[in-house]
Amino acid sequence: MSLPAAHLPQDCAPANDALRGRAILITGASGGLGRAASIACARAGATVLLAGRRRRALEKVYDEIAALPDAPQPAIQLIDLLGATPADYEKLSDTIGAELGGLDGIVHAAARFDALTPLAMHKPREWVETLHVNLSAPFLLTQACMPLLQERADSAVVFVLDDRERMGRAHWGAYGVAKAGLEQFASILHRETEGSSLRVHALLPAPMRTALRRAAWFGENAEEIDSPEAAAHAVVYLLSPAAVGARGKVLDLREEQREE
Image 1 (cartoon, rainbow, N blue to C red):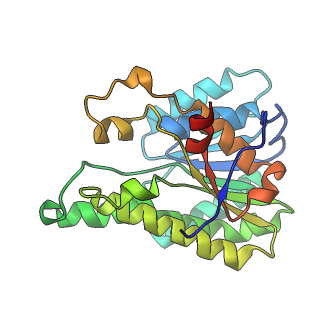
Image 2 (image 1 turned 90 degrees about the vertical axis):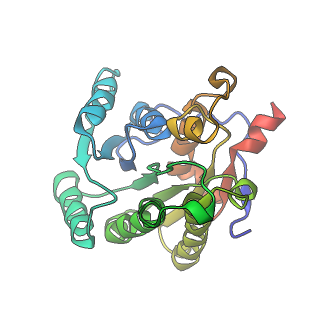
């Protein structure tokens, strides 16, 4: 285990202004957790940068946020995590600094999962691309934006993990390896920044109704699985100053679900 576990405070319900005045970049913003987190952050007062590679899908989330009362106007940031170069991430950071004046948080909600596949049958290209999107891209984006984040008096990066035990089982392939590596990356980054204003957090959601879940658990009754909204509220908590005691830890929402 790389990171110790943390739990949501009892009766945790972030206030509507928990992220007021903060700029938050969310990758995979049109996906299950990314969309839910984007809307939850906007409701909490954040200016949300909706990052992804499909403009039309991002525009739908943009419209949902624009319809919220008193929510700051979001922004769309097109970026392909698979094809983006280090120079592209540096340009993105420069653009954020110039247009928003800074950055207060990143939520790494984007994920790539193709299928459960035995290693002997894993296509090399899919292996490389899955590792890049799920592990290398979060590193490149975080590294490029660290100067912006550390300019703030309080900022946070949230890495979304998956079940450690399940990821070590057969057929999880590159996705399982990448998620294990992502936790190690979060652990190292925490140790290197724990004396700074930048907080590092990891989030381990309970099972959620998402496209990734459907791909891995084909035939499962989706009505028996929770929506991503609960995890989205936890994202708001981690991005807020209230989560300072959870820095360098994994917020395990599976435990919260089992206790209900």
